[in-house]
Length: 378
Image (tube, rainbow, N blue to C red; front, top):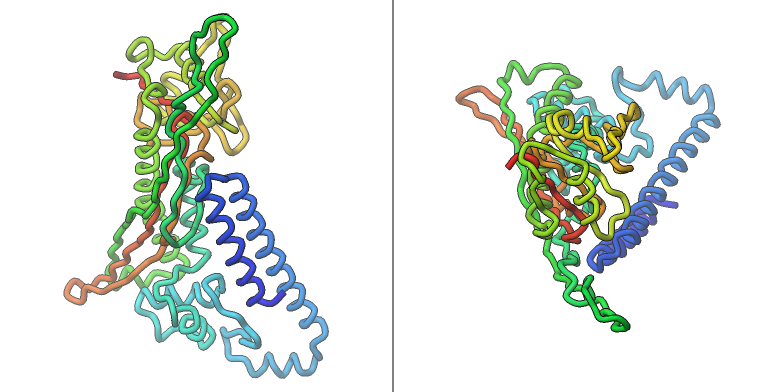
């Protein structure tokens, strides 16, 4: 498969996935996403295998001469395809934003010019991956929700209520009404999440690896927190009012409060419990059932702090202390319109480099009964 064929196929699958998401068919849309990832992995494997085969069959004499002609610190650009994922572009990008363009090798300069000729401020793939990994590590809910990187406005179908056919008391022999649900279309046009970092000219001369690590940490911490806070706030604001309630006694959480919350959930494939660390250890860890048995089970494996009635419990500090948010995160759709990017500027009076991280996205809970929330302190 050629790169052009791959891009064409990926574009087709993205369009199909977007339409499925718009129609509310999230599982089918996720399948399209997985198919894209599989195609890209197969293409990369084929590319690496071809490169290895060419290397094996290269004449030893020609190869030696070729290596002698190379300049120190540069690699061959023989049929080299540069993009945001190449190491040459990563190095060039970091040198450029720290005022070291004159230190670029020939290959790094070619990679920078080629990658930014149509789209400036392209963040290297390694940095994007590291930032999102750190965001998901610090704020698990961001990695748990259903995310689509559509780069455009997305409309999703949101389930809001059962207007007919809900549970009701009927005389013997009288059937309940057929269930009818109400849906609305929600437009996810995006919200801006930003973070600015300033470094003096001297500070910006740190090693390339150190500069990357610093920017990744700063942007992930600030933008990640802002995204997670907005995500939790959006979910809380969309939950059906009947699914939000106070514990029976302020400052005390009991087994009945937990079972009540689980009982209110609808159409959940996999329930996750989100809470702050303070809430976990102050209210959840010591919970017992009517027989006096602990119902929280600690977990030593990565991915969850423990389990509560079979649901994974995860620490999410964007959930306020004294609150417990539980539901199916896959029922939350997050539309990324502009993935992470870093723009740079100079303050020549203060002798500073200014790095501005930016991301635009928006999420929505597409089923108001897919989440519930308990307020312990009220």
